Image (tube, rainbow, N blue to C red; front, side):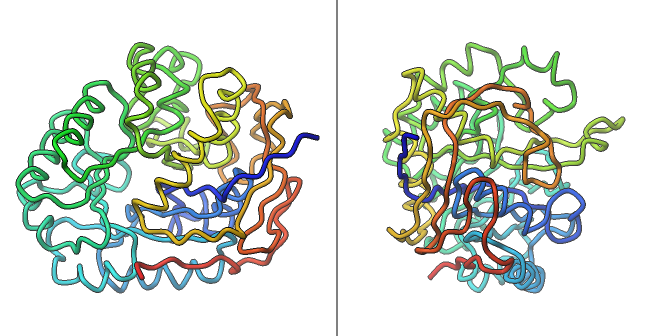
Amino acid sequence: MNTLLLPGLIDPHVHLRDPEQTEKEDFLTGTSAALSGGFTTVLDMPNNKTPVMSIHTLDEKIARAKKLTVCDIGFYYGSLGDNLDTFREASQKTKGLKLFLNQTTGNFLLDPSFLEKIFLAWPNTSPILFHAENETFDLALEVLKKIPRPIHLCHLSTSYELKKVIDAKEAGLPVSCGVTPHHLFLTKEDEATLGPLGLMKPPLQSREEVEFLWQHLGAIDIIESDHAPHLLTEKHSENPPYGVPGLETTLPLLLTEVHKGRLTIDEIIRLCHTNPAKIFRIPVDKSTQIEIDPDEEWIISNEHLLTKCRWSPFHDRSVRGRVKKVILHGNTVYENGKILVQQGSGTILENG
């Protein structure tokens, strides 16, 4: 077996559904899936069933995570513009503030008139993150020009958005951006076979748009899974929710592109470790590593996934490269498909 060591990967964009929707995922199953995919750190979004917009709900979520997680985890805070007085305390316990300018899971939509006040109130020690599409994407950048402070634009999916980010960076604005694996490896053409399993926000784009993202990958800072588990019964219902799981499939998809010559190992490290650590101020522990067999060929299968929802839009896809072992802070926590530590062994990351 050919063995390759990589630093522990960081996924700064997951929705673990815990608390309140643990039938879809919980902190134990979600962080187990993370380890299976080579991710030793995840950052969890605030659009829970009860959105995390108060210190009380944040503290409750952190307390529950301490009992269940098996990898390192941090959290984001949320706002609808009416909780600015809690920002300073919340910023000390989280890795950023997440704002939703478009409709998505959780009915967590911000009135844009609050943006400037939020930009001024949230401390610069961590970024403000955006779910923004189309005209709201422009709105976020316009406010950034008036009030420069670190922001991160999540899950870019179009050439229009990426061109805007490139221009903003060239203008010296403090902006970073991420792209998801499903926006790199799926197109609108896949919707015919995926059906509701291909329903996501932002939606899948044309082959030309996907190719633009690949051609300008150097301008993208992070690959983020946007891991969004839902039950298959929900996805096949009359009103299917948005989102797809992705923690266990991101790395093998990327490693497959390394074999095709489209990507390098150094680029994977940049997109999935170095930049996330820098942007979200995550301490790097050199004793945290993942061991992969870059040559193993295998087929992604729903039945072998550790995520509680047990499905993937990449089911039946052939990939090359597999996580064999995960070492977290010097301890072997995952090996050959099995979690080797007790729940609650993960570290809670705050904004120290």
